[in-house]
Length: 64
Length: 295
View 1 (tube, each protein chain N blue to C red):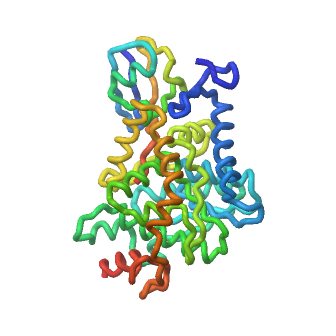
View 2: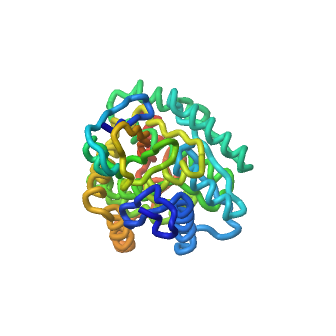
View 3: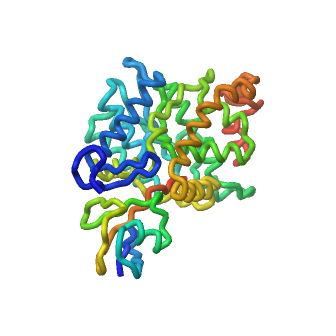
């Protein structure tokens, strides 16, 4: 189970492990709209996530 | 994956070019795209006074940084539209940024110029049309007015690849031929607007900002969910994810079509607004129409 943390404090648990891309798709996020950080550093979509990993989600487009 | 340009671990995959980047090469790639865009299209002459419309968001902040590093006369302009709990943060970010990087910052506001704010306009609006359509018109008017007053040769906006594609599709879906054709032309009464960030995607821009450690206001404007643009943005991102390169292809096709479109559509010269004297394709400009409705 990988945990996605959002800037507003919300957390989503995704019941999958594997590449970040797989996790994002499973969570319903469009990878084109976000950047992901783990332990304070940006990670690319092929990063292999394991159970209990926690990542931070940054939304890229928020203008009006 | 390793970075496509060195052996460092990559931090981002840029889908439209299918390249993997480490932090250092992502920064270099974004800066190269901006400078190539400026050089290839002769956007900025060495002695130009360049005014960057800085909103405090990531795109204009990044662009301000890159242009200030590479051109001698670069200043910033911040417009406060009067959106509570949103613009105060942006102003604070851009003030700090300009102070740190020794960039001259000019400010203006809807309140000073029009005697009202976007919040008040939304409150009083009986038509319930999108707040962005009114705020955007007034903002563009004020940015141009200030640029003229400050003697700017070029007015820079932080429109990125995503913004440009959204503009193209919005104008097509709204059958706004004139607006679609006018994007590249220079009109009397307007300081020439340039968009050196137009080849950089929203995601690349965000990555650049994070790597550089810039503070910027990425909170959503409280009126954004009501905009047509949001819908187009979502659809385009969905398309880009499924069909890599969709945004770049749309922009390239548009760039090739626009010279012919200009010839066909831009037959009518701009008039002077009967009210304020500003340039307009109508008798009374859109800014004056909006302000009149508010009386």
